[in-house]
Length: 465
Image (cartoon, rainbow, N blue to C red; front, side, top):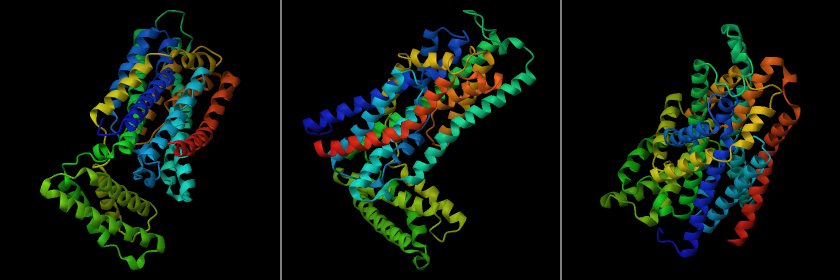
């Protein structure tokens, strides 16, 4: 396969299976976020609910694009993404995958709603920190991207809680039908208009979950492919050297206009390195244009140059290190985004295997978390209004996060929304302290535990492989 020796072929297959396994577990771990409300309000039978959710998760992967996938990949130090030692790449991939799978399975077994996003991001940061430890350079970890992602993961559940409380109060003010604020009669479907709303919100959460969480699996698979078989997957197309040169031209023009005499030492060093990479990349493209193809041996080198140029200039723009006008900075960011289209992509078959893994996983193993969300967060049975409010807020929050390219925790947004709906009814006393304590503990422990576990496994695998 891809001209690899037997040992690496086996490792490649194992890594791809592990990535699909993570997404499969993510499916049944997070299914409850979408189906709990429709099941506990008798809007849909469990079987119909999980099939609907699984189908929409499947479709959501294709609709979400790859911005979240690239956010996940960009958490890693750029040096780790251009390390051509295949065994080091395998060590990194196995460490973060095994960590994510172990933590997700453990929390699912105990019925604790836990964020797959926190799990994956903690695992990736752990690998990045361990890589920095080996290089004695922790600045290589993309802390700005980690902070951006961490902020989205922190704010989204608080937003879900607060917005659900507000929405519940709005519903009480506008809707005079008291039945939607009462526990549903056993085995009796709700009025048709309420049922339609609940099914639509369930569908929205499922589709949004697929478009956001599915991208995390896509990012993992691309890490595997780029790390083990870079000649085939380092670039969107090896047959487009002129396209890369065209994307590079406006960047080279703006960089050449930067007055180096106004730069501090670190910014000056960065710009000089960028100019070197631009020159090297232009020479590679000029040599490739006559054949209209980049030779296999040079494809990873082209990817490395693009990543180094992009990462260095992005950091400099964010820190305002360069004497650029707002228009020039905007043009440079736009040009860098265009350049990254040659490295930031995912083949159709990658989207397909991840969407299948997520969709099928959604249809099994869902009951443990559903019971927690439906019965153990609040002291009262979930009402129609609570179910619709929490799911509507969750779908909106996740959809906006996907549009912004930020990974967000479906689990925390929805469970926080359910908690908010319970508080809106009878205040904090309407929550079950033990469940809230377990969820909060898992929330607090996920990142540090996954960071330590993945870092330890990475260092271990670096020695073994």
